[in-house]
Image (cartoon, rainbow, N blue to C red; front, side, top):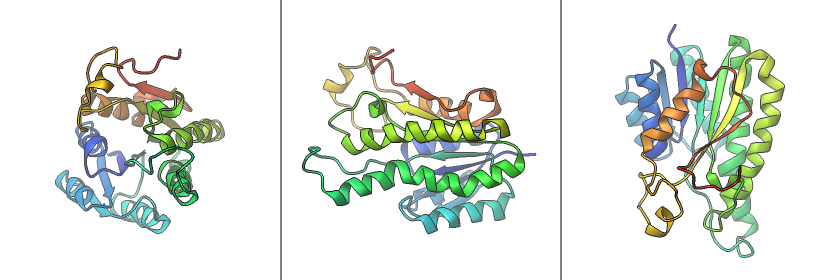
Length: 232
């Protein structure tokens, strides 16, 4: 039986490389992005490509339905999004706070509603959310991400506790700065390893949490940040 992984936001960067790494690990992949690049990535890996928006619940449902129609099962879901609204916290509008919640929190909740019944029926499944180092050490450069991904940590623990006995897991990966983005020296200076992460270093952690090699890990927030955050 071939395992199946869905990658939401897999057109480029972390998501696209995670799709490649999962495929190398033996997964069939279904890849979605709003740009159309995810469709090309998925089809290029011999899997499913889908164009849709993480902000649209109907697109998420259609992506799940297309994956089930193609493969008949879903073993792992990788929730990955770009950056939502930024700015001074007192100048971000209500509309942009709501948009940030859609980007960083509701996208995961909506996908969990869709795929959890499938995973429970299978008796196994893993959801991996790409969060941020700023979830527990908020950074003013990423205000809506920091706020709502702190909330995501709470949702993840509640979900994990509810479904652990049925072998359906959820974990978060907390990346620092990744070399798929332009390098800024002031950010490098904050990192004990003195460099940005290679995107494959994130993908290796994603594959680990998506696979049964991490079968006793759930409800966790795994930092992959080169030592960027200070708390213990």
